[in-house]
Length: 75
Image 1 (cartoon, rainbow, N blue to C red):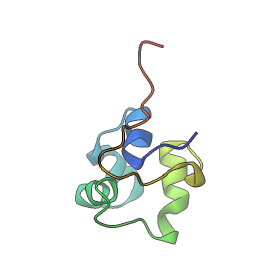
Image 2: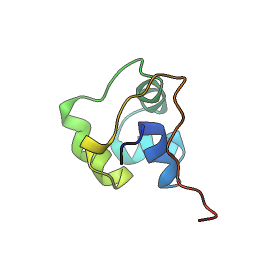
Image 3: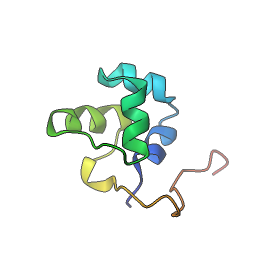
Image 4: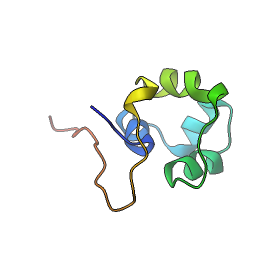
């Protein structure tokens, strides 16, 4: 399954601030990744995988008009 960075963060129940602290980046960096204003570099990929508990190759960057793949808490 492919998911967006935002969906990966939401799936682990983290705010942008919490994810930023866990990865050693700023909240603005997380926001920019999620809005496709910038992209994580190779040095951060392992941190993304660990913090979001998902292989990096399953994360995709979708155009804004596509729906997110977020797990339902009622499932």
